[in-house]
Amino acid sequence: MEKPGLHPRNPHRHGYDFDHLIQSCPELGPFVRPNAYGGVSIDYADQAAVKMLNRALLKHVHGIVHWDIPPGFLCPPVPGRVDYLHHLADLLAGGNGGAIPGGTRVRVLDIGVGANAIYPLVGHTTFGWSFLGSDIDAKALAAARRIVDANGLSKAIELRRQTPPAIFRGFLKDDESFDLSVCNPPFHASPEAAQAGSRRKWTNLGRGGSGKTAPALNFGGQGAELWCEGGEASFVRRMIQESAMIPARCLWFTTLLSKSSNLPCVLRVLKQAQVRDQRIIPMAQGQKQSRIVAWTFFTPEAREAWARERWRLGTAN
Image (cartoon, rainbow, N blue to C red; front, side, top):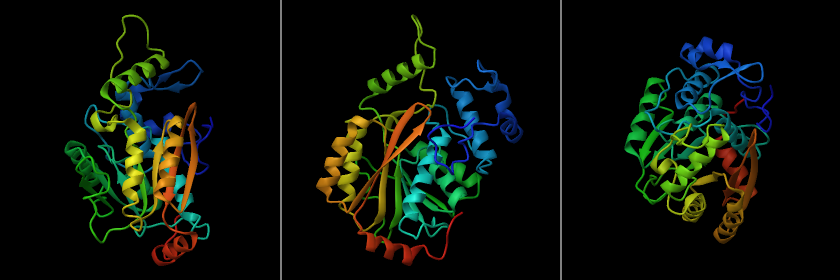
């Protein structure tokens, strides 16, 4: 069944073929069961089931043979993360004569790579891009490094620790530049808000009711993965302000923005930063609505010159 809202190139837009997924990842089998619609699925309120589905998708569709994360760390839904990257590929193609640039010449900065390293893994296997992933959590970086090393991708994916509250400052080397930055910013403004969100999701999954306590989020997550002071709006505002200090170091800065109510504030900050161009790219997965905010300090002519100098020797399918 077609999943509405996903990018036309997204390999997950036709839904999940559980038979083939189980063939690739037999550990998924025990979690698959008949659903109310005459088909089969998993219990999306079960963290173990969600993690195993991710492992199967990454192995069967993206060729990531080894993938695991420690208990409690964020286990993001793969289709949405893949969608983000395909939209960014279109963004780069817009300044490259319509061709998606491929290969390790394309360098991407992942702000908050997490223990799962989804963006670098999928971005490299899909487009051949190289990545630098940053995180403030040493345990998350160690878990991500195990995944990268186990799949033989250490030459294409570098990981580096950042010191909060800086996002770009003090982290990048003087000679580094990037074609894209990606980010899934912490959504909540406090641990209490994160727990309240967990309770709402638990209720939406049909598990609410008197006497029932919401567990951790079904996609996991802890600490800086879920919240920061001021929440999503504050984090993105700081990201834009810091990007204005290094305008020539990245062609397109981008981030996800979950709450539409935060968009007016973000647009005001972009105007204050005097960006040359900005894009709001809608995203949807089922009932979930989100958006990508992208901005650049390069003129169209400068973006074309960037493409000529860095990409023209390689394109992705």
